[in-house]
Image (cartoon, rainbow, N blue to C red; front, side, top):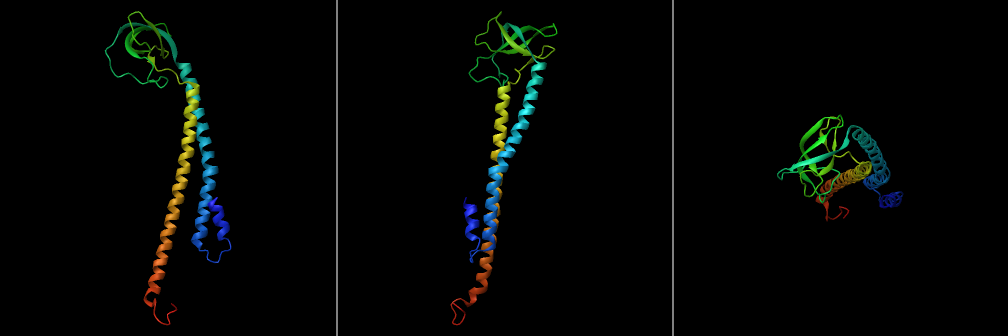
Length: 200
């Protein structure tokens, strides 16, 4: 609003400098970009990310299978692999387990069990690929949508920050030029300042 007011105020003002008008136009352009271009770019990025993530969700759900595994024994404590679909409060233990792959072959190996105190013989569900290799849970559609929304919001905010940064840089350069011009004018008028008949 200051940009629009500045343009109106300087429109017919005899004291208007070129830089005053340019500064107002720069501010108005930045305002329009922030209000229109930033949300538009954010929505485009969000929609594109949504399509890519939902495609990944479908591919993961087609290639991953949930099977039942049986605890053989608990393994010594170690760093657990991160699962994007779990929270820090979910009980997770690293165990040695047996399971049957979707293709019918028997599998045996270390996996992460969502069991607080696993005992031999306990059964739990794990995700595997078509050959029975343990995998993380497929991405959830709602989580994919959340990530897409965050990507869109982030793109919009980044665009707005870049536009505002460019505006501030342009204004800073104009102010520097204005001060340099004033310094040059003062250097020319300075030697005659205060002299009789010098127009002071």
